[in-house]
Length: 180
Image (cartoon, rainbow, N blue to C red; front, side):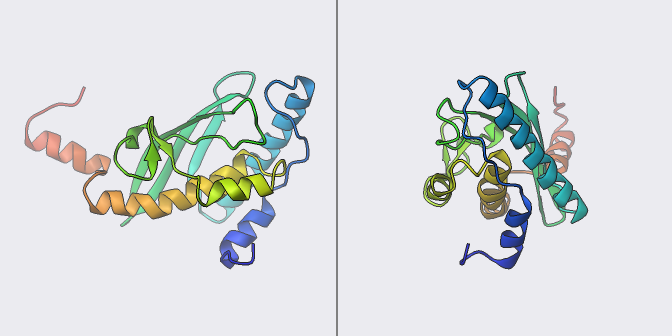
């Protein structure tokens, strides 16, 4: 944490650390881990809202809490770019971090794997391994997805690989092509 900027350090210290070392195969212990995950996500979301820095919404897509879906967004040049977010909890969780996916961006950047999985291997995975099992989903979003969006979305927008929804609508109207 010595090399992090003060904002990141402050944010990270406000996200509760988790204590239960359990994965999806661990029955009642996994239920306890999920409770901790939800508490950390609620704290992170509340902190973001209080700082007017709200940038994602996620929820478990199944009752077991092994599949998650939602939206994330990034503001660039005063325009909001919104993306679908999804990930599955690996069976070896929490030893293995979830692979965060932005399917709409699949193939648009080299810092992404097939299926829209964002590249977190170099910077985030060693950090996750060092802090297992204390890190959870909220930490993956804070230290994985947020910096990835900040680094990649401006480049994708400036290069024309990602267009704002209003730009797409305007060009469709100009060519009399209607989106279905």
